[in-house]
Length: 308
Length: 283
Image 1 (cartoon, rainbow over the protein chains, first blue to last red):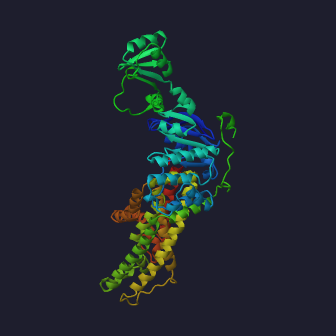
Image 2 (cartoon, rainbow over the protein chains, first blue to last red):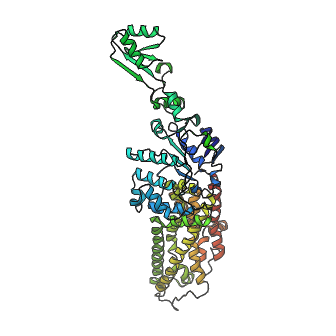
């Protein structure tokens, strides 16, 4: 279990993390979601005792990271796959990590096998692709067979095969009852991997919800219909108490299903050229939620009403 | 875990740990890990080879310069030549290699980002710093021994060719000689620790090596130009490191052990600063 209690981190004038509190439960993949610069990496570094919080505490299984005995036995963390000496061979890199925590040498071969790295383990890391580096980083997290795992943007820069592999790997870890905490700035990625979401923006907690709830909350859809007899259709639907918007020659309807629209049109012999259900994408819902907390917008911010 | 109640349906089966070694918290484990890391990068061997080759080679050349020009050296100046320190004198250049080795032992962690991986495995920062320092101290001393004894031996063979009466003939059994040669190895060790401590404070390879170069190379030269008694005293402090290889008294230098102690203050003070900073700073 991971706990952040009132975590804050200030760098000069910038409050990178602002009074953040959340709990990450075992047995689930918990997505740590936020735009770039939201404070995800800083939070993870504080959880791992690398950065000192300005205020608040970060606990792993109820303890400060620095007071864990043989931390690799408790926590496996992958912040940046490039945080290794490129001149070392993968096997030696893992061996040194294992030795520091009294983990037997044979475990190194096990994690290399587990991540499909056995054949390249005797090569120097500088020749590795990003995907291989990620696998090496994941191999390192598994050395101590820890109950808590943390990954910072693990799918960044990976090919689809690599993404699928990591996704399944994380799901497998959670299924074994481990605590899996994974950060991402991509909602679409998290919706396929995470059971639970901790969403932050500008260092502040925006949401701490199950992925299922997040999706159902953000999928209040509408129906769009295009008809040469739009005026007639609009009149009929409005009489039914349906809210109707006119958009570019078609109608957007709220509080009605496509089935019902089709039935109404058929009953009144109206021609329908197009009838679709519109769902707000998860990405759109995420952007809506974090709209006020991204540091840099593309283009000038438009007045709120005009964009609706 | 008491979390079961807060989890959704389909929550986990109890998990089986595949690794059954107990969690440990021991200094010798960290030491072993740092030993592995020390030897698994190429720069270690290259800096060792540079130290040995440069020191022995330059020492032999400087001895040759004395032997070949013996007749042109004034009798009064001949008396000031210390055959032992002369045969070890190539260290003035060779020391840069060991300073670089000491610096890289910790600066490479920062330049590669590896420090974050290292500190997640060993979050007790002073323990990490200590383990690195121990590995470096032992290996720098061994490298010093491996450098200084051959350098002495070869230098004496070269100096023996000088047409001196009586011929220059110094052996390890003579007074102060073993101390001077072993002292040379201790000097190499101190240089390694100086590079290490500088890099631990500065967290930057080039900055640490430059600072080390300034301390052992530039400051001693500059100090020779300082005027008056004040200048002489500063000069003594800045030239303290070389005293350990003297077998004759030199007016402008401390005695061998005093000099060594003064020189050691550099790395001792810097390492204390590094320890304080390492506990405080974000990685």
